Image (cartoon, rainbow, N blue to C red; front, side, top):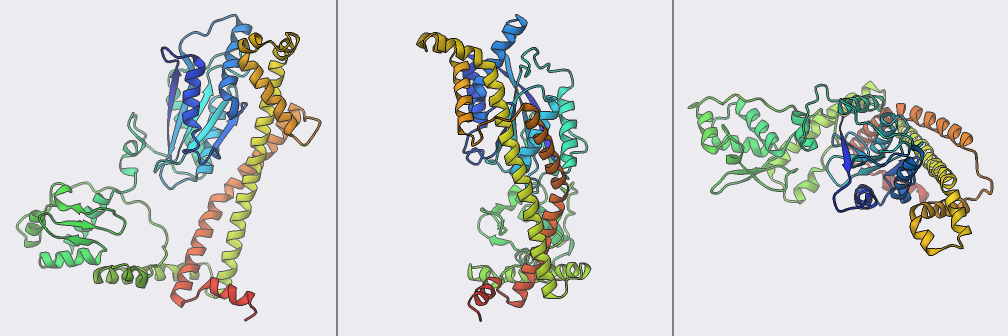
Length: 465
């Protein structure tokens, strides 16, 4: 599930186009937000020289068309934000790349910078307002935002992600935009737990508190009654939960003095088929209460029951079969991931090489003139962007092991083949990941239940015992 927004990036007053482009692209490619720059990809440009390349295209636009740069829009940005925990950073970057390519129809160069510094992974896709042939400008047409959203949904579906059925227009942040589709807050989970316990009609308030403790909540009694689950960092006071949840209102409801107010409960997020069982002894050593121990035992019984159902349905009741299945599922997932990573790496290399080939051709005449001018400092300052890009291209060619550069036709053909390979791998990647997670969870539960330590056994095997 992803939300999108198209933003026109303007030239600020008192700043040059170069400064404005530098501010926006530097923010997007911030190493602290993009895993050290690992989550930055590009189309028909090199992230290291993207500012100069955008500027060069605008200069060539003026030369080719004879028209001055009109307006103050220098580039466009697509922000694409994903639902928490639904997509990996690498896949988000790939989806952003595909969205940028489809939306610009391959006519504009762009960078994709995926940020992981927030709870929701999101990408900044910045594309040049000037086309690659330097003859046109991007037109922000009426309804472009809706068209962008539809394209994003289509690509998300191709990657096996959910989409928002009835999107709402909003300028708020991603979590607010999602409404009740976002994960439940700790306060909402506490409200639901209280509601569930009150439906069982506890005999008195002490019984209610005992049930809350059994449900995994620590209790703090004082001036204000408060609760804290294992997931929370701070206690939540009852009085902060709103109407119907104060201590007096809960006491009245237990005593039958007042009816519970009706409210619309938030939707619970989909649960996993089963989870890892809890190491109760370790938790008790950390200071958990007897109520927590009781709840954890019930939780473990449920998870083991679900685990056995999974093993029965998949005919994995023999431990050797389970172990073999876990190995096979992991190898399948790792193989697909390696295939995708290899394709992505080579595709990125091709993108950079194509960019430098084009840049070299575009700036060759300027460099020739610079050389004829005796490498004049004045000439260099007047053509700094062109000459910097030309030198970067020459340095890149020198770093390659091959002496003969491939043709653009050869590079485009190889890129198309790699893209097809990657798309095919992605079709089975998500299912392979889910299967691996399920079988490894099942194996871990069985190992824990049987007191079996796989690491210790491997050590014994290596020592010949």
